[in-house]
Image 1 (cartoon, helix red, strand yellow):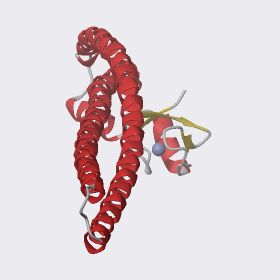
Image 2 (cartoon, rainbow, N blue to C red):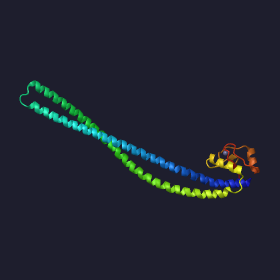
Image 3 (spheres, rainbow, N blue to C red):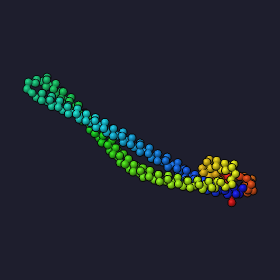
Length: 235
Ligand SMILES: [Zn+2]
């Protein structure tokens, strides 16, 4: 049984590395995807703001055109009110209309100014976002380069470990024991074995009953931790 445990520990040594490399190979594309999503959201925000700015500029232009038209109307009314032969009633009517046009112009100018400052604000935010995107793009490209390099390295390492593992696993470990070990490896985060030290399982740090420790010392059977089920060994 001691031989089996030794063989299992040899296997565990390799599998621990394999587990880490596999986790790395899963993590890398996920992280890449997350970073890509950030870029997509940034681009969306930029498009949205570009649209807002465009819309605001159109409205500002409309207001400017309307104001120009109103000013022309104002001048025309002023000219007409100054021509000879205008009686008092007509003059009063002209003046009334002129006052109305002036009020409308003043209101439109206020609206225009408000929209201009709003557009400036949005444009400022837009510039900041564009700068951020340029930076994020650069970081992303670097990251992407690193990821493909790291992935390649991890794949090479995994191939090496797999070859090594095949050799180890072909040593005499009974099928049911190897089965148990393999299941534990998957369910216990790549650690199927645990040392028993001072009656405490070093995999989950829970104390185990004395009889189990005695059984382990006899070296005639596989003994598992009653708490984490890992295969126990001791020195
Ligand atoms: Zn345990």
